Amino acid sequence: MLKKPHIIAVGGGKGGVGKTLISLTISLALAESGRKVTLIDADFGGANLHSMLGIHTPRLSLFDFFHGKVNDFNALVTKTPVANLSLICGAAGAVGMADIQYWDKLKAIRLFRQLQTDFVVTDLGAGTSLNEIDIFNAADQGIVVAQPEPPAIQECYSFIKLSLFRKLRSEFMDSAWVTQLLDFCNDPAHTRDNRLISTLAEDVRKKDIRLGMRFYRLINNYTPHLILNQIRHKDEIMDGLSLQIAVQDLLRIKIDFWGYIPHDHQIYKSIRSSRPDAITSTRGEVRKIIMRMVKQFVFKEEIKNPNTDNNYVPLLAFLHRKENQEEGMDRICSIQCTFWDKCDYQEGGVYCRMPENEYRIKLKMAEVKETRGDRIRGHLGARRN
Image (cartoon, rainbow, N blue to C red; front, top):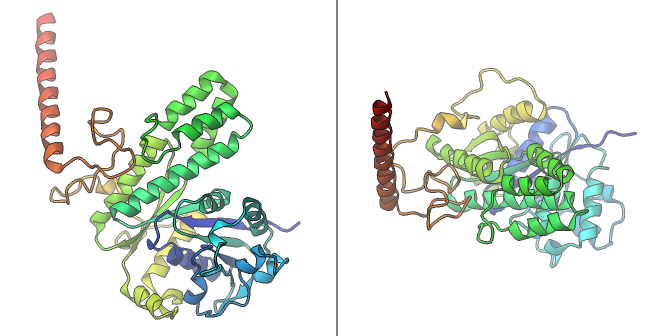
């Protein structure tokens, strides 16, 4: 029996953050290591991976498969100019491709695992439709990509939350009351239900300890991976830390930080000109960084003395950010905030919307209140002594 391929899905919600670039460079790194790789353009509504590899007119695509023109899924596999790397093209501009039927999607996911290859890398489209989320959850490793800007970070958080709730819902299809609870709380803005997911898990456990243990087990095992793209300054890595804190505090799951990708103008020019030179070049800095990530997080190799100037830097090293940062841009609403459950602007998982002056005033008042409390407790302690 043939070994099933290891599937890696690359998503993140917002378009334009570099998911396609990350998918391609991961595939190139895997192929360079000698593994057979099949890269799937799962952006059903706006496929463009073929052009980035210099393939201007795909012979067959997923459009042909979903519309019954091709029955053999392996016939979609197209050779690329890169050794060990094959491509299954999406359908650029095809009407209705973004709304494929549920059963067709399940069939495609099943066929992904039957491909005769070592790795399958799926490049997901923008947005948080069930197509993207279900393919992401079906992968062995799910990578979310974000850029250091509020819309990208917020969309990334929403993508992770919706993916987690979708996974939980799929797990508990045999329990109607649990799925109803999840459906009620499955709101990115937390406007209908502010309960943390750990609270939901405890509610389930109290009612049915067996289901509660399943709930906790899934949360503990659900670990998406984060890559920050287009970093121009190291301070921007703080956005990744904020996202980690929000995911940990509000969703109670761990998000692994794979690293960051610096801005590379040459790659941008290569994409613009539809020439894959800079992307496929083994001498490129981005390619080297991705290769180190693949060795460490996919092949589980021990990486000694990584170049911290260009690669994965522990996010906790950036906790003490400079004071002259843009207002509120280093704060994401989570239970770590002093004003959680006492704030009119509360919206878990998004950037703090409280004006900076108001935030600093409230923070000062809280510090004064805490100091007074310490003094009173000190006086009471002295009297007892």
